[in-house]
Length: 125
Image (cartoon, rainbow, N blue to C red; front, side):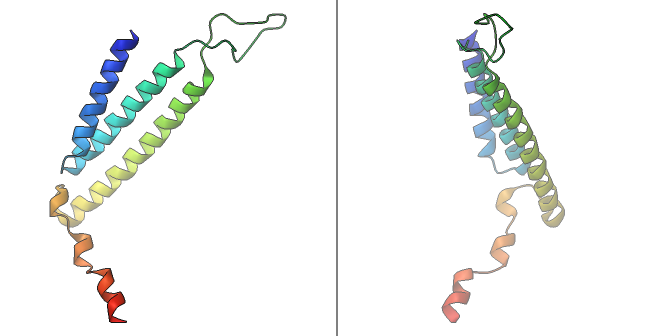
């Protein structure tokens, strides 16, 4: 089962990376979301391994036979929140770019080029 999860995570990572390299802003956002999901799946797999030191032990017991490691679970929860926040910020930036430039193609957005060369101002002083 671990091999299947690894293959799925690798496929999702490859698809996400391909989408990030696209010129369309919406594909970039979806690729970033797919990439964070693949990373979450890899973190999930690391938490499936059994630990010799469980997080909670009942009174009188020395070990707990089946328990999950809480650290990867906390990492996944944090990664989900950060990934969602990053997706929302990127979607807001893409919406702003579409409203200003009426395109989602990153090659056609030249806002920074219209401002001019910043080194030219320093050389004039």
